[in-house]
Length: 382
Length: 186
Image (cartoon, rainbow over all chains, first blue to last red; front, side, top):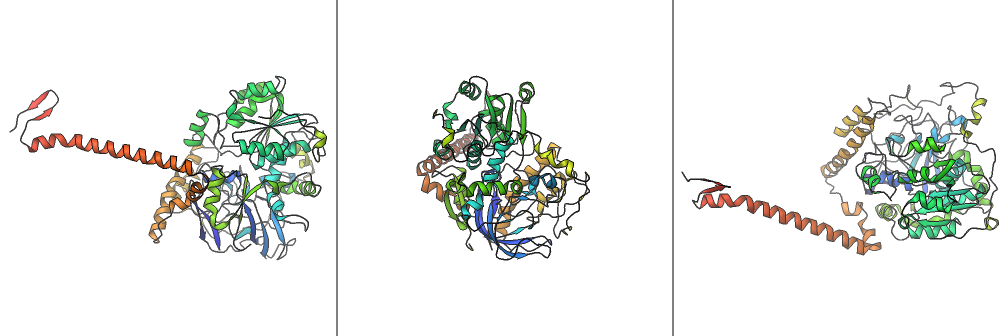
């Protein structure tokens, strides 16, 4: 089969790989029909995530048709068209039982601090991902969900990560009616966080990014006030002026370690890798939220350390909430939001690229070329 | 920049998920329903690894399912094994893995060459799309690379000719001039 193949930072290609096989009684093999490149894939692509091995196949946002099931799979059958949450979750462990499907304890041998994630380095379990024609799906009775007949597969594939991650970012913000919410990052997750903030009753949603085309998209798609960080001298002062000098009620970091906007963080985090990525968005979130406010983090950082003003977290009484999205927990509600027309995720898809052109797709997304918001790979077998 | 305040009544679904009970402790809400705590759940069947799996020393047992992509190999694999003797809390664990990742890139090129494949690096870097969507940027990058290359070449030439001069004079039978000291020819 054809699969994306990581060769090193900024270098990927498509290559023949052996077909995946059932390795566990609860496995399924899925023929991929759509697979997105996620903003967090760019952290891998940029060489920022430790234990990203040459030869691995990325891809944690995909949907497809069940081709084969293991002997203990009960809920899926061959031919089902399923969306597959990016979390690999057993559904039984201490954490899954709390609804923390992003923190499953039975899916990642290499680390305890991260759950299992498809195609996201060995730090997230060492599973090949869905940017391929076929993929092995463990715990097939737990995560994969049959796509409703009425649902567009383009919406379905975005339910595997982007939509629930953005929604959970807003949920973790504990938004109350009328709150002012600032979202750092106008990538797909930031867009969904901004969109979801309204569902929780936000009174005002502000989006910050460095790309005008993305901000324009955020203004229309997410009804947000938008500001380009390159036109702002001091983020904390600017946002306090925007919020009667107290600061925002909720700040959401939807950027993670690939942020821009600070030379020192760029040097230490992005280039020298002495930090777990450039944490300037988180720095701004902490310093721009009001005292007693909430900072919600869904941006991805590496597992080491970052320079952030933790003293201000203490002195301002800020609550920090963060996690990988618990996709399975959120899916029923999000499917309902799509059915009712509250959200329209597929509007974010700007590029459809054959799997064979995966290197071009990564470069376009990484370099923010051609107005790219969200690229979707279409494998040959689809 | 946009400062327009939005009329929330115009937003589909505004406030439908507003939940006054959405407090920051929500992940712990269901913990009281669990019959027991700790490593006591009814475990899934254990996948038997058919490749080498490096396991975090913070795990007291192998998780039930495991990823089998790209097992550790070569010198980078040896470094990874060494990293996994340290906990996730140890900075060296991660620094060693990052170092192994960089070495692994070189190993990947060697593996390609060993099987007779010359990696098409420009294609892997996605330069075709850069040319298509950002030709000016591509030209700028190419210009910088050419300028740096030319400067490097000129510097190396200058260095070589600078080092060659004394030898030329020696060959011509002249005195070797080392600063203020002049050595006679023997």
